[in-house]
Length: 323
Image 1 (cartoon, rainbow, N blue to C red):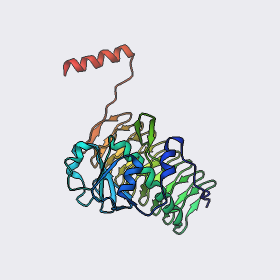
Image 2: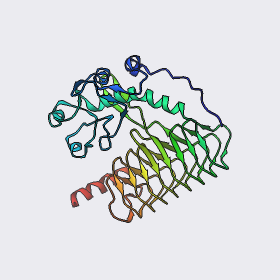
Image 3: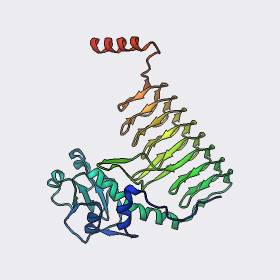
């Protein structure tokens, strides 16, 4: 079993100011966090915050963010503090707040602060391995992982911290589990990286093909349930959920926070946009782009046969006119 050195990497130049000011902490006060992310604290300045969480699940010791009014109704009743803008702050009069101009950009900054704690926790917890685990050449299992019984990890696999793999799983060569999700907040200086503070939870009897990628959750876990089969070159984005016994064919990919039900079949080169749900027992045919939730079982497709580009444009125009 090979583990990477436990040295702390140097921060990128874009995040250097935050890293210079951040502290190694178990918790941080509301006022201190507000200062680090360029916001104005309102409420209990001395409130100790130990985690950054999703707004739906945020507890009294954690902070979350809200960027849109539609999320107010699902805000946790126990949220310790909320990062938001002035318009939404006026509607959250009983909350501890950090008021900022751009909540999403402030969330990116906050993720950098709490990422140091995330790294420290991971480094302090040794990985646990079940019986009959086989690990191939040049594969890396980082700290704070749980690997079940009879798991086969082939050559050149990278498994990041906070990954759980259930019994009887097979991970093929070149696959990466727990890598950063694709999350950036736009700013006047370019893209500000959002550090991902979650993990990956893989059930039993799962097989993942060669050179696939399963990103860890931004806040919370990416979940692959029992019996799922994933082909080569498949991308499972951060905070996605794949239900029991679903099969996904090669070169398919999904954006973040997709929920796929049980017993589904996703054919090759299917693309799924973020934050949608697919019901149980759905079959999606090859090369289909799924742009909305599929709420009923059935077979779905969205494939146009190849033809000359001018003919494709005429065909699309005809559909629009007939509609």
